[in-house]
Length: 506
Image 1 (cartoon, rainbow, N blue to C red):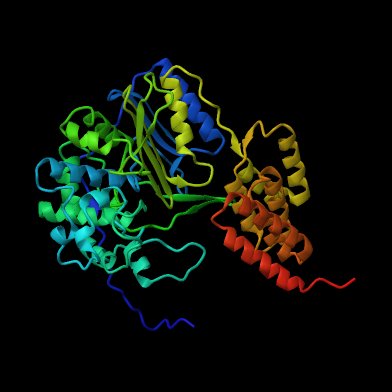
Image 2: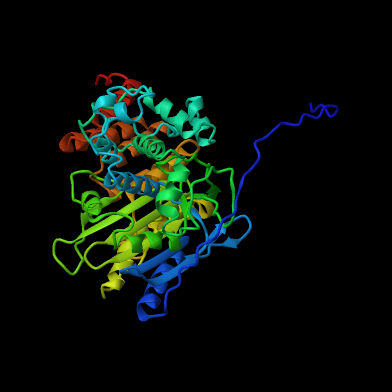
């Protein structure tokens, strides 16, 4: 019952508002290349695989820019070239660039340790955790102190507080410091957002300012990046897009995440093109710093960049570098080719199974190099989900068999998407889930997980003999390939066999 006689007014933090000089929107000339890129992105948008903004450049000069979809779905506000997006882990690229600038000036050394830089923080083995190891994700620090654990609402209070920006960066790093190491420093590669938060605090301490102040001083100010910054999610920010999750039922607003030097920046495609242009010279990074950051290595990502071969470049042995950002509700990819100076920047405010920004990038690079891009295809899992919701199981799988008969000529088929769709139905309709998992196991016959998932659905239907057969196949395949989930499949098989009981005597 509501007591209408008492009103309680809670004191809330005052919302801050960012008001600053905006950047000039990126402008590209009309050209046959631009028209081809426009048609390609329109195709991706038409099949539900891109919402957001794209900019393309060659040797620092804009070739194409375009905006697609909605920045705010609730109000029908379209994306524009000045829409600001959270860029996730591309923030790490900026953090690494600031570290390299300080190394160039002799203020930091790659061999400096946390014992030297943050002596007031209680890191285990601090004397072995170097700047170099933090930059290359080999420090031993855990992945991300702010991660929500998957599949449960049980998590430490600190996770909610960090993601609500209740802690300062220094307080957050103090929490990181007391966590046990995932492994000994230097032992192996293990992606660590926590490591980049520590780097961000180290940079701020060295420059005697905040992380946001360091960004402004070292990069945003000198490059006139007026549409970029680092502010809490509660800040009122003009033209900031809302983030959304693509689900099998449509879209939902994404849960906001806290900011850190590992993933807290916002930007626009125009501002990121300023970074691309600056990287052709040495005002942002010296030649030595770029050589260090872009050297091929065994690490998946280092210094904020992934470095990989560029097989379609004009010159053999060329390299391609990219930085990506993936948050709940935002997805971004910043790609540069080191041979012919091409740049493709994609910023999206949708995170979902069918948004493959790397495929779009490959298509744009193909056009820029005079080749024909692959036409985008629809997600078979998403289309099947829509049919299941509107037409029922029998009609949906009749359509599926029709797609299969044509070799899925108009669809791409993803095992992970189909598995997620089956899991979507498993708690409430095991028979429908089993139909999805059966189609998955037929399409991906050598996948242990496909057979195990089918077994789980059959188990839920009470068909234990069929479940045992399917899970036994998962175990057999996993043993052949030394699959990392073999133990889990064996445990699942043992559980079903206990339910069946001992074999009946003839």
